[in-house]
Image (cartoon, rainbow, N blue to C red; front, side):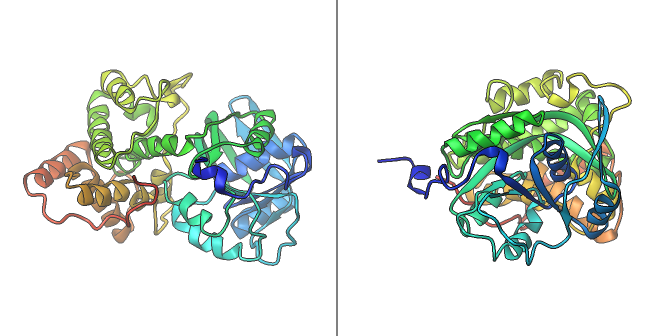
Length: 373
């Protein structure tokens, strides 16, 4: 019997050569804008769809993209609303919004032809499921690079450049390789893996620590260099890994694809994290949850990270005190309208110990994800 991915309509012959493609980047925040900026620099046809002030700034002054080597300015077309777009046969959608915004973007894509390929450049593991209900040619993308907004029209690429693409729920094809080639020419280390969702489950394990850094006002380079912080993060990851394995899921992460090796390396030295490769004292990588709290946003992706583990843990009967506390405390910070740094490491650890002693019902978490055995 052919693989599940092979049963879906092929896209290989539905699109012209890569150089003729139009990359429609929906949710052009920091990561999406950086993607578009690098593609535009190589002469690719790019359309950025982002917030009104961001889109207007790019239309007026162009997009300024900074990185460790310097900066450059490009002038890709922008929109703040994708409704009414004249879709083309050569279009490819890059969905780069946060998980909580995916349903809204899918509604805005109601006029997009159903055979249009959609690549999910997102954290979390539900987006591909949602997208594939509407678009049969759905691709997952592991995003292992970081960027941050400096203001409308200005983005900094802060570290790494790794992307892994594959068909959802599994498989690879010539079209994925052609898109990876375009991203490679733009400067990314882009590859294709038929098991991309296993890597995205691994990224979920990594993202479980975002809430910890946001609550304690830490950043990646600091957290991975302090033994006490590494231990808390490792316990959070171990808990998540135990939950996934209880559901028969073996996530891939780290240089050898072994999640347990990655976590052991974190406990020992923290050297396994890509942010520490070539890091300098003046460069700080803040996770997206920290940035959300700093900007006073009303939502974060924590329900799609830690909440996912809490929900799956409850279903499997696996305790999740670390992830439950992180989920509860981020929700409390949002309710109070506070920024990063509301709790110390010691305070968080005390709350975890209380939760371990009296588990209780815990927070609600999320719905059961797709793709479970």
